[in-house]
Image (cartoon, rainbow, N blue to C red):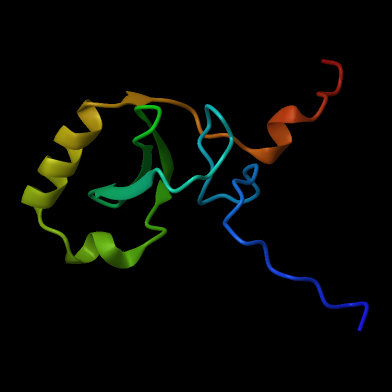
Length: 98
């Protein structure tokens, strides 16, 4: 059976390859991320680098079950981090001439 490959013994950090993970600073996902909502806006923060970025709006319905008090606490949490633009895979692609 040549088509059977063993699973790695431990998780391997991978370069960002999706819209919901990957620190914009180092482009890796090593489990340092936390998702929070402020009203209908969904943010991800990287506790390793002290950064947060906007993931989107109304992507997760969990915000509907939260209270204004929860959003206030989440905003205070985000205030301790630096906002950064999200990384997208096409950021590394060459741009056409203007």
